[in-house]
Length: 248
Figure 1 (cartoon, rainbow, N blue to C red):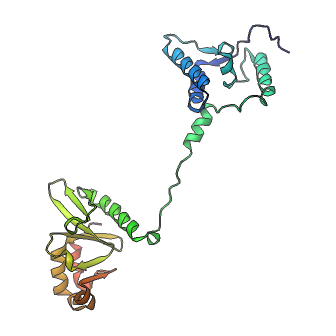
Figure 2 (figure 1 turned 135 degrees about the horizontal axis):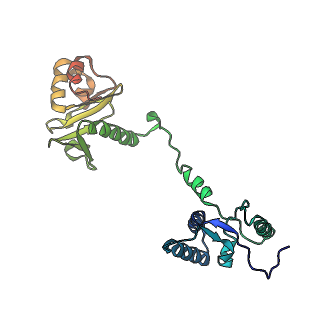
């Protein structure tokens, strides 16, 4: 049994290891007294021009000693270390749990705080689909030298602006499918929509002229009554025209 009145044993820990432990403890310690002591110890140690290679744990403030993880394989002070470790085990019921070491903290920090998983487009609501399509198209347009700016008020029929590095600006109406609507006529809009994994971006008025001239869309009930026509596929008569505006 060690003598309580004897000089505290010199239980040695490498200085760099000790600094890592103290920084890790500072990150997880909530007691104001402990935090102040740890911070002061770190500042004093890092400010020394010639810090010691090893640290004597017994030289730490008494209320910090129980926070430090002491190695049990010290070739010089192994017997004394075993006594200290045993004493700490006896006190474990009266003291708070041992705080994590640097390795423990690093391991916990390496665990992802969010699990990434792809969403199903069909499971999204209408607004979410619009946001999804905007992000997809913005990424494709970036490869062609465009940066995009989302508009919140559907300005002049446009959902967003696409600004090209050469100076041109396109006012784009974004749709989830091929769509024609009379309300978009004469506004110098570009229509963007996906079909079969490809994106098409074309001038709306030119597309409308081609559609009315090459397809029966103009005679359809949807167009005559509702002033609107949409399709999940490209009408046959417009394929060659739209191929000029396919960007992916």
